[in-house]
Structures are given as structure tokens and as C-alpha cells.
Length: 334
Image (cartoon, rainbow, N blue to C red):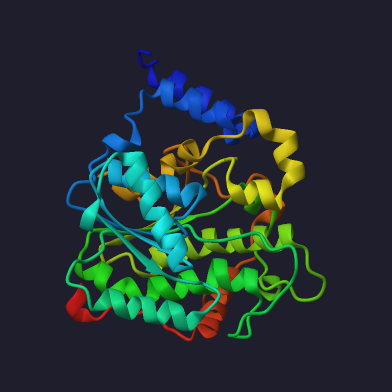
């Protein structure tokens, strides 16, 4: 399909975004990829780059890992058990048609245990090969409220505190290997929630869908804060909204939504496309932005989800305290 004039392309894109359902569904991906004549994610410049993908045994994480490998990147994936590590390697090698050798590494990481995050980061520090990009994908929607061994509400820890801690611990390496990137995978559910730091860990009555949406909103806010606070390090920070993609998590946690939207849900590759784009594309412009279908997007659909002044700073301080870390970049790193 030949490209339309830029003003018309922008107009169609804006119309899709305003309508929401076409934008988030497979319709949005199909129309935008044709309007702008996207090159497949597998053709992005991955050779010579090393990318970490958390939660890569299924869904968006698996699709992203496979596309990164197809693009020529070296990929380090994390899963929560040795069985899943072996199975993930087997499926990736089957899908890509051969032994991946050292181009694919697997490691264990459970974000429900902050000690595991610290141990994982320590193992990375001991490795000679630096990371070029980190993709925070791991997560889940939990129906019942629970607390981790660290004393934190589980949804909040897995989606907010643990990725924040991991970024903090990897930051010196990423800065030393700049330019590098951190990409966080959010969800469209965050559009329904306003950031209120006091309720980020769902005190009182618990609703799994609401807790998940609050955590996803926090990811967007923290991405902007990372970009603002570490603008001079050579590390850029981006957050990707994958649209409505059919993943094992959606099937198990949101059966009603799955039934209602089934015919128009994206597949995992379509959902992972922008994630891989943010990890590999050479020119992204300003960081700290929310992206969907390879373009920066507004963080709010309605004005009443805009946080009160100072709320982002309060969230940063809260997460630093709960993670037990104060992110810094040694002067020798950049």
C-alpha cells in the first residue's frame, strides 16, 4: 500500500485514537501499519544489541523475545522456574528454526520476592556483556488480595516496586553502555485510573482489575519521572501500551472481556510490535512518553484522571522507600 499524504495519515490516526475501540483493537494495528508502511519488527536493527525481557514464557513477553531474536538481537529472558526456562527455549528454537546457542539466555526471576530482584541484578553485574535495553513485561492480574514476603501488596510490588528496584540496580550498567533504553509495558486499563499515591497499594477493599489499573497508571507516571530525573545519563525511558491483545493472562483473568472483544483482539505479535520498536528503533525522539502503535500518545483520555500537583513526586518517594533504594548513577558511569 502506498503511503497517503502525511496530513491525511495523521487525521486517520487521530480518528482511530479518538474512537478508542478501533485504536486498541487489531483494527488500529492493521490500519496504521498500512497507512505508514511499517517495516516488520523483525527487520529493525537488532544485531549487536542485548535486550532483557522479563516474564517471557508466554504472551507479549514471549512474542517480544521471539521478534527480537528474529531481528538479530541477543536476548536474556526471565521466567519463574527452571521448567519454564527449558520450555521457553525449546519453543523459541522451534519457532525460529534452529539452535539459538548463546544468543538466548534464560534466568529465574520472581518479582514477588525483592531478594530475587537483587540477586538477579547482582548476577547481571558480574557478566561482561552489557545490556542495551530492558523490557519490563512481567505481571499478572490477581483476583485476591495478598501480601508478599516483603510485606507489600502483591499487585503493587510485582508491577511497580520490583521493576523500579530492578531499573535502579541496572541503571549504572545501562548508563555506562549508553545510549540504552528502559521500556515498560502498561495496559489500557490505566486510562480509567487517576494516580493517588495513598491508594496505590489498594488499602481497604480489593478489586483485582482496579488494583491492576492503578499499578499500570503508576508505571506511566514513573516512566516520566525516570526520564526527567535521569535525562543526562544517556538512558531513555519509554512506556508501551500494547492495545487489546489476546494473551493467556487475558483468557484466564478477564473471561468476560475476552468473550466480548474476542473477534477484534490483537494477537500477541501485534501487541508486542511497539514494545520491540521501542527497544530497537534508532530514533525515538523525546523519552518519558507513552507509546501505542509506534507513536507517542496522550496519557489521559478524560481530565478527571489527571493527578494532583506533586503526586508524581510523592509516588517516587513512596516507591523508593518500599523498594529500599535511591536510584543514582555513579559519575564514572556517565
